[in-house]
Each structure stands twice: as C-alpha cells, then as structure tokens.
Length: 191
Image 1: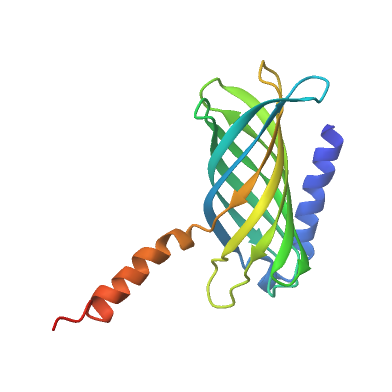
Image 2: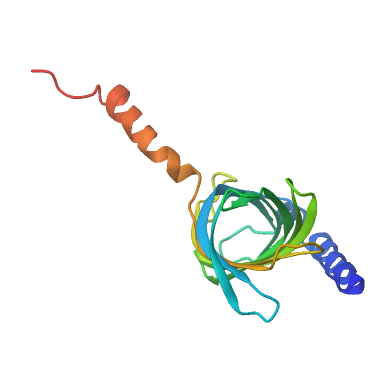
C-alpha cells in the first residue's frame, strides 16, 4: 500500500515537473457547498441505514491552459453526516475532460473526524459542468458525485454517499441581481 502511495506521489511530482513552467502553475480554483445522502454499509457490503451529507469544499487544479487539458490538483472539504460528526477531508484529484466543459474528476484522500479524532479515507467520482475561465483563476462548477468513505480504524461503518455540488459563486447571484436592480438600474420606477 505504501509503495502505491509513493508511486502516485512520484507520478504527480513528475507530471508537474515535466509540464511547461508557464502552464504548470496556472492554477484554477473552485469552491461551493454540496448536499446529498447515502447509506451506511455493513461488513458484508449490504445497505444499512440512510444518512444525510452536507459539506463545503474547494479545490485547486493545475496544468490546465484550455478546457480540453487534464488537470491535477488538491481538494479540501469539511462535511457532516446527519450533523453528528465533523469530517475534514483533504486529497489529490485528477481532472479528465470527457467533453470540453464536462470533465470527470477522480479524487482520493484522507481525513479526520474532528469530534472523535478518528482517521478516515475516501475515494470520489465527480462529473458535471466545469468552466475553464481564460480571464480569471475561478472556475464555475456544478455536478454530481459518488463517494465511498471508510474509517482507518474505529467503530463507524463505511459510507456510500451520492449528491450534488453547487458552485459557491452561484449563491451570490441573487444578491448581485438585487444590487444591480436597486443601485445600477435605480430600483422600481416611482410614478
């Protein structure tokens, strides 16, 4: 297991070093909430009780200069299962463009349940719309995910999660539209 982790780390470093310097460090980032549900799995893999999942996450992608380029990056998320725990997750992710604006993002990493101090690991499959902004380092993204989480050691059973991510900037749109209507357009016409 350690050899695989070391090989993946060496491959990531080699990819970053082999990329042209101007492209390699042009980072794009994305942040936003995610919501979904899932199931606790028992030791035999059978579906158990249903759970709710709520989190806020962000990621940074490197190596992308156009939307057709693959990316390699880092992810950080803070989430809760039924408001009963608080998981802090960090990992590596790879972006594989299926279509220009609809990539697949595969990620894996580890984390910590902040309330019980138990370690956990996860693997995640995300697919959806993700822009590649030529004018800004921010990339708008909306998508769906499937994730498997398991404690490294501990009492909690593994979880299979599924849900959707919403771009954080989209949450600001109603306020921006209201500002534009009230300030820029001078609000409702008074007769």
